[in-house]
Every structure is written in structure tokens, then in C-alpha cells.
Amino acid sequence: MAKLPKTKDCKVTPNSIPTKAIADKMKSLNLPTYPVRTRREKGETFIYDFLRQRYLRLTPEEWVRQHFTHYLVEHKHYPAGLLGNEITIQVGGVSRRCDSVLYHQVGTTPRMIIEYKAPHIPITQAVFQQIYSYNSVLRADYLIVSNGIAHYCCRVDYQKMEVRYLTDIPDYTEL
Image 1: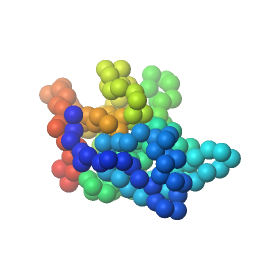
Image 2: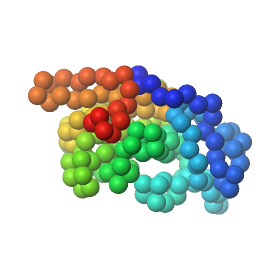
Image 3: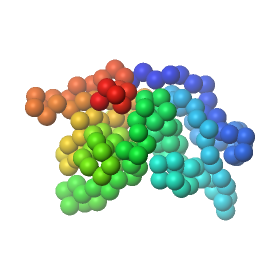
Image 4: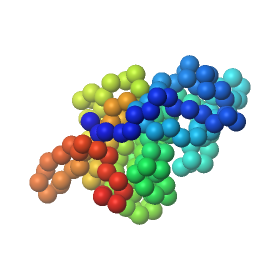
């Protein structure tokens, strides 16, 4: 499992909904905090996705996605312009969505696929099978699976036909 800085709680900014309201709904994560932007509309809470530059309904999985993408950009130096959220692909003739994809360059081949689960969902072999099926189409060099608590990263070596699990999420400069 990849090692990340431990945090006590994921906090929100003073101008967003109160911390207690989010804390009641969302679980604390094993990811660094960031200034979460939220808003309420028709009784629902929305969280700002800085990659897509729009608000999305706040779900436990979206909570993980937003924290993890902020972690990659702010702590691991991944260029935000090379990351995309909810990328549609065809797997066996069926449309599927990769949670996040890191590209080599804008609009080119994928370098990394990231699959998120809600914090209460354990990372099982089925989750790895899901990301492997996406990678059968995209052929990315790196795969990450996270539920916000546990994070797993592996590097795929296509020449040796093997998958090597890493002890940490690599910095962008190490890819």
C-alpha cells in the first residue's frame, strides 16, 4: 500500500458549508486536506471539481476523487492539464468510465489510470479486475486504486509482461 501523509480530518473553507455538515456525511481520508469548495442547491451538497471546472453532486466516491486529484497536483506535481476525470472508453463494446486518467500530453496516450471507490468499499480483487479491464484498452504504464483510506499503485511492464506494485505514489518527475 502506498504511504501518504496522515491527516486527522478533511476540512472545508469557511465560506463553504460547515465542517460538521461534511464531517457528518463524509469520512475522514488518508489524504492531505485542501480548501474544499462546496455549495448547497435544492437540499443537495455539491463539490467543486477543479479539473472539469464545475460543481458535482457530493458522494463518498467524489469526495475521494477530489482529494486524490488535489493530492496528485499539489503534492506530487502532476500537471492538472494532463489529468481528466470520468473519461469514457469502450471495453468489449460497452461504454465504461475511467475515474481519472493522466495523459502523456494533452489528448494523447494515457500514462496512468486511477480508479476510486468510496471509503467504506474495500479494495478487492474485483476492483483490480475493473482497472485491468480498462487498461486492456488504454495500455497505461501506471495504475492506481484508492478508496481514500488505502492506496495501491503499480507499474505495468509490457515487455516483461509483469505488474510491479510500488510502495508510494510516484512524483510526476519520476514517471
